[in-house]
Length: 515
Image (cartoon, rainbow, N blue to C red):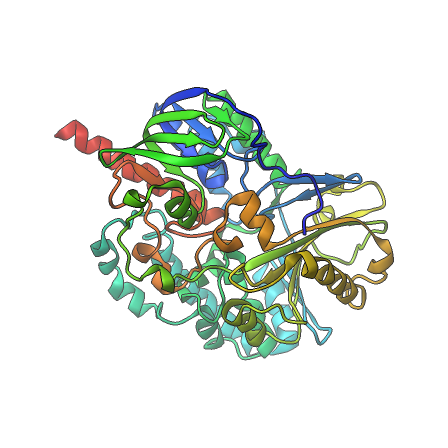
């Protein structure tokens, strides 16, 4: 399991501090930061509280042996959502942060030894496709057209719109049916792409937000067009630099930040949220409470039984959670210059492996990997002449019966051996300063239900109105700006979730003014 110092709070500390603000934001991940900034821009006093010692949620930064590692998201696909946060206060993001475009966006390495570069240029991508199957060039063009059509509905009309009313979604049903959203991502991709390896490459996107391509609604195929429209970027200095500049922005605009403080209970009186009480005794009062934490955790652990109700399309026993994540961090004493910034290393099995992870919840002997090499773009992540890496391996969440104390070291050795035998020669001798996280760490450090990497899974029956609402149906001043709420996981998803909360509060304020 993890072998670096915990970032969780020290429960032995005890405070009786009292905090008062118009808005309390619980959780300082990207969704919480964005919600806090949007509320502050509306003139509200805002307090943001988090159990970790730094803001950013899962976007923490680890340093070991001179190597730096971003622990959370590593790529940016909708940069304007960050631009907006600075523009709220008359500032420009580019004055503080450089978003550098990547080329290729992703490099796929297949078990056959073949490689496929997914490039920002369609012409370059087509040349790559031709090496596998020339007929799939037209298929990819048609897939992009389908993705654009889905984007026009799924993103422009749904992503930042509240789904607190069932009829809001019903109004979009004709469009969704016309776009074949009842199909899965894999089914949609396979209807356009014929080569089996290209089918894998072009259906991989749901895994970036916690979904199985063979069960995730094809609405998530909009990511193809989203990437084409805005590109894929890396923040120079890493996601940690992005978080640090957002922290400075939060401080500049007068938002109070309380860190190292774990919330035990959201306090409710006469059907309305009144604030929260921390494990260490700190008390927070507010007119509105916005949760950036995992909604299942909030409902089960932070609300009393009488307040845990919510409108449900399906019982809790049928809730499906995203996969877990095993993340291996390490440095190398050599530079692997042939490694792209993002590499997706595909094992010999695809659909069957995903079934093991999502359905059977067993840890198979084989795996597929996402490899992040930030030093390909930003050498500051490692000492001179070295490289910095993290390898993300999808694994079952904690609903699977896996002893991570034992399996963590074993999986580390198997991953290192597999990479050493393929795209990273001699890794077994060049690796240094390695450590890892398992789903057990996601549960303990981030209070993620069942250690799921991305909250509930993005299947159709858990999307839009069926997903956790951005405003609680019974507690009218309790909101959710998080991966488990609408529209979903990933940085664009949680940043849009904050926009939904802003819209809801704007509507409420407008009603008060006119009533």
